[in-house]
Length: 604
Image (cartoon, rainbow, N blue to C red; front, side, top):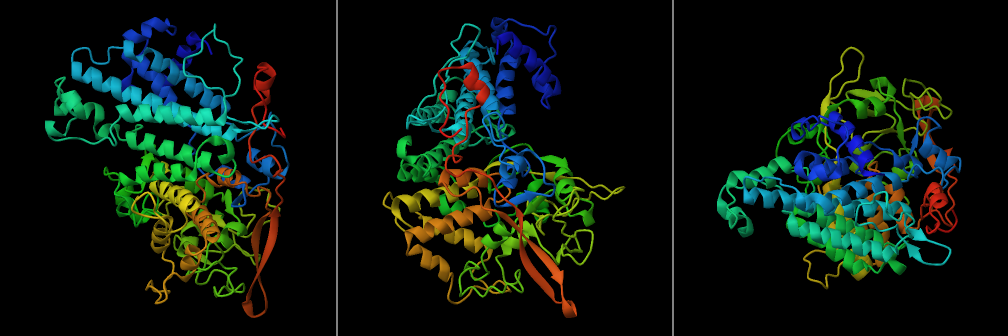
């Protein structure tokens, strides 16, 4: 994209931005690149546009292409790719190629020009602080874009080499050579690491206000920095920008991806390295002492309204987007009896992943699971995340059985106002929202980009793979076992119906702790449960090289004699993924047609 086109597009973005106070209206719609360095608002706009290209999703989308959920209508791009076999290099709803490549271009242009900009010409200290923060943000954003490109498009070509994407660290213009080959996956990882390390040099761990000069880094004090100036640049008003802790977390995410079964052979990253990088992030909150005992609910549940709507940081969330007051999540996903559209339907596959309250999986003969009463004595997280037949929600009983009601299960539903699986989504929704016609009530929603639970689970996965469940050869201070124990205790497992701990404790966890392979499966299952409906499952299945084509199942509930409920597991959707090669996503076909030096991943 030529620079003049970039500026024209930026001006349109600026007009729609929520950050009106950051920009002054332009006298012209076309400016020379050189003029940008004289106007810091326009240069900053390049970075703002980089943020606008972040590939985070604020609603459940990709999970409907996995064994965790189905849409309530047999349609849509994610459903088609999963169920009609339409996933191709020229039809890829999972692609982030254009979005992330554009983001890299804007960030590269910013990095190339930013040192020429007078950010605060009247104050040497502010000039340096702004320059440092903005530079750190830019490098962190570039690492993040490359991480998502690796996740979506990294893979083996026919020559047996594991490739990433072309590496671009300078801005492209009309004279650039666009026919760049893909760098190896390992080299892309190194670039991500380098960018994260650069970001860490310039960024504070967190954006927090200081109260005295002694709290300001010495390098800025030497330039004359005062409390007010430091807080302007690095204070709490910048809290949702990319920080040092975020950069460290991005590096840990890159490492976990690279150390996963799909990539580890040629990525150059070991599980021990990934575990160490995850631990570095967690040490910033005191390791296990920073584990949020309410972290599975307090960032979205209406029970924590004062937390969500307060100004203090939420302990569970490392990085998030701005909060937003709306009814969109509930309008899309409330059951029809509550005037919602019930769009995302959890599967029986996911429901079966929730263990019994005693901690044992339902397939364990000692679990106490009763298929005639399948929701009794289950993991409390089941009712926290999923609405099932007979459950009370918003003071109303939700009936999804075949015996009637507005929320009845329609396997061939075409109305868009029902469930195809017998279940409705509950996670992410606030029960104090109303979408009733004539009495709509909005509430604030938080959209996390990185949760600490995700990093804890990443550490557990990598540490178990590297050293086993209870080993800590690096002296980190906690183990994979410690993390999973804390997560399961927070969930209320190994307790009775009134919440008292079982005298025998979490027996199943102890069994897994004695067997590394069993612990691997337990960690993966805990990750599936804790991060369900957060658009993680599709990528996890692929990096673990687990089957993508598991049929999606549901539950049909009938009423028999004497009003006894009869539960029958049903098939909802067949998945038509090809496990032989689709754990790696394709390079877009259009790019291959344009650039001869690009190699496609095998199978595509």
